[in-house]
Length: 456
Image (cartoon, rainbow, N blue to C red; front, side, top):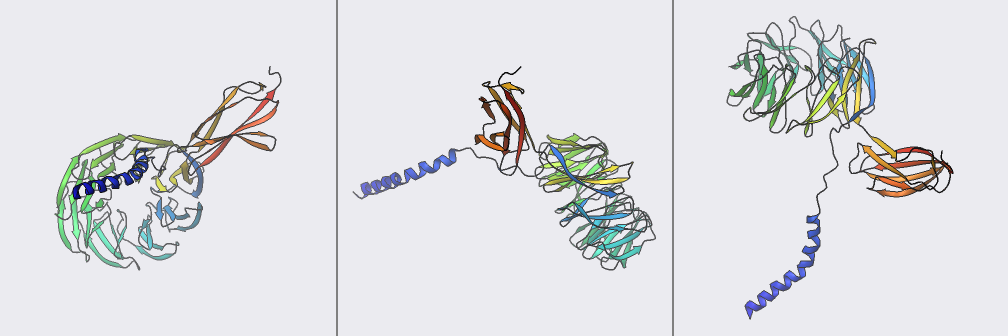
């Protein structure tokens, strides 16, 4: 009896819960709708542009909510990224040949006289320092110190707040690549093909042989340092173990720093090839040719990577597969890195005749098309179908309307159906329109349409 009672109790329990499971199982059977697409979406169109004096030098960068870059006319510009307008500009004593280098609270730039400037975020000069040697590397800031190298092989440390020289270290060759910082160690490469490890006081801790010149700034990712050398090898050094983890032969050397996603490393070679490697072992995952040689940083946006080169064409690839996801062709050669500033992708162009540059804000292209099966004019009672299509929408809905003068009538309510059939019963001048919308976007298209009693 006890067992029977237990079984009946269990059966009753399942009977009560069965409708609940049945009701909720419907949600499991429904196909999952992907979320609204984010990041860069092609095709692109120009939203606005900011004109400035001179040609940009390599890179436009984010500085908080603002944007900054330098030009060959000796200016450093700061722009309001939201309002698309210039906030301030600073002019050096001489022309500039490098992009601004951003620190925690300051930015740094040097001119052709090797005068290094420390500016605050409003463009005010905090200090300037004349360097007797020729500055040859990018500037880096770490722990309130500023670091850079020279063609003469000197590696400097200055105070970030005052520009005062704290110490210098003599390497065996010119220093072209910017320094990296690993714990309390300062790591930099020289043109003689060596990696130097210094402590915070500039004392040598270790030297590792690379074998060839390191030109572009390495990428520090975790405990690994990734970089290209002039002998067409790409390296991964384990900084904890102080030894090379792997290296592979490539088709060219890199002029800009590599970038990384969670499992992959990407770099542009002088052979105009974008290469994707496995970060762990250097295995080649994919490679893609780009339109021309590039001296501009790559930009990772979500699951995509974007590259510009010395051409008007910007290209975008899938991070995992290398599949092309879109391209944009500008009216002129692109003169800077692509930079993601949601919802815009930024590029720079240069007008050689006017000697002025343009910071261009690109956005997702939104277009609506409305096509009739018959062209106007048409006679009364004739069946006419209208088909709508859209660019830049996700899971769009369509609403058709008819206008006579100022009077507007919805003739087909908002739905996923993208066509409407019209049987005009009266002559007159009409406007047929469609409104297309999705979760974030909306736009309209209209066609004037004349209906007559007797169409020729």
